[in-house]
Amino acid sequence: MKFARSCLAKILTLVCSFLGIPAFFSCDDEGNSILVRKEELEVPAAYGMPVGFAMISGTVSGDVDGDGAVEPLKNIKITSDRENIEMPAGGYVTAEDGMFRIDVFDTGEYTFTFEDGDGSENGSFKSQTKTVLNSGSGDINLDVTLEKSE
Image (cartoon, rainbow, N blue to C red):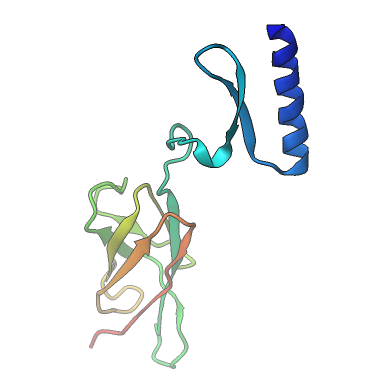
């Protein structure tokens, strides 16, 4: 009899899933099959990807030659006030195309400082601070335009 109930519960679960009805079957204290609605289950987030994981990426640019057109800036140093970011010693540095990518693992605000890392080699630029909010809902684009220092 228990085998028949078990088979019936599995068949009903399949039928419910095909019909789009969120339901699960479980057993009560006496071993009887019962229907449990998905909304009644409390499933904590565990294993796999952290809940607040996001990739913060963008391009740092500035007017290198004073013609008014912004161009990607390489060797811009990026540091953060958050301790839970796996940053290399001294922070990140933008690539040749001015792009950067930082992986963060917690929700909340992140403040980044962008500063000229190579002096006057690619033009001198003022430091700038930007704050972004990681709500845990996806990746974040952060494009930054630095002003030329005098």
